Image 1 (tube, rainbow, N blue to C red):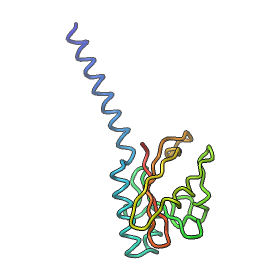
Image 2 (image 1 turned 135 degrees about the horizontal axis):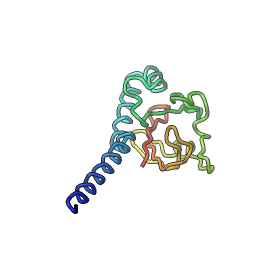
Image 3 (image 1 turned 120 degrees about the vertical axis):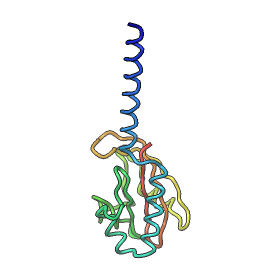
Image 4 (image 1 turned 60 degrees about the vertical axis):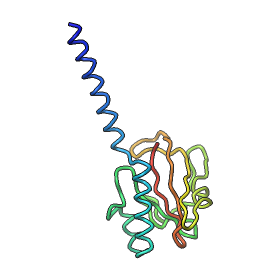
Length: 149
């Protein structure tokens, strides 16, 4: 009987681990976000107009689970975002009023990548979760890719 209980405990533990692994696989990692930002930088330098179009549509690998790049122009408006293109990026705030848009613009520097942390709902949720956006400046564009912690 003790043997069966022990086996049941091991099975339950393994089941819990696989559930955790699946949940983690649904979200992109910091390394994957950095790789997508690097891809964004290269695409923007090669053909800015094509890159912005692909980013806005999530094409050519610019959408992976909850990872996607977004960019804003010198006027402070999103030039590429899955749902916010044309709206103000610079004025973007979290539910609690944290001015993340202006923080992204302030941290963006050509040739460097900075991290901006904030609370933002995961796709399909309304509850804020910890998110970090890796941000840089590419010419006249501020571009970032965010991942959830």
